[in-house]
Image 1 (cartoon, helix red, strand yellow):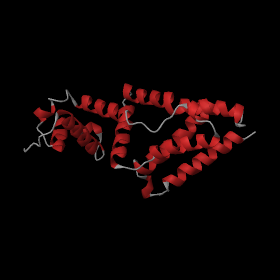
Image 2 (spheres, one colour):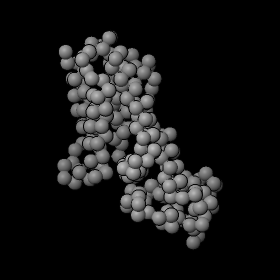
Image 3 (cartoon, one colour):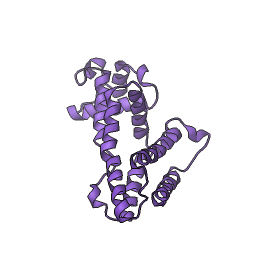
Image 4 (cartoon, helix red, strand yellow):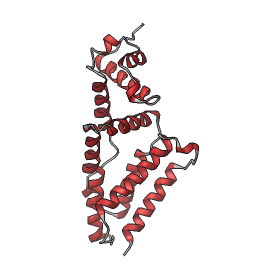
Length: 203
């Protein structure tokens, strides 16, 4: 097997990307380290110079992907309703971006989370302390300064809104629902935002 010479960090990244490529094509449980090595263009022995196990590889993919989060800004920088709408639009647009790498990552996240491991919990906490926290902060602010509905169940409605968009995307792109009902994801996102702000404005 001819191995292309790479710096250590480049080799590690290449192995992670190769693993994601495999995850995009088949279930995680059926993937073996020998297959990852072959996809990476190296021997299985060489693979173990960089990682201790398949679980180690998966954990590194999750950690690295978490560092490339969707766009967030401090809540205090969101001063107007238009700022708030733009923040939500930018976040959700990033979340429903279609790419083979993102699809593979979401497949991986779903499979890892179903095993009840800490990675799924960590991802939940990342969203809770990030996007949801900013949303909840600005809705409370909006109830005072923007005329938002004071009876709005903030934690519940924020999660329903976020998961509705995310699961719509997952159904379309990961579970291939678009083969049956193909929707424009950008339009879906815009309708979801519009409906959310109608709920916020109800008196």
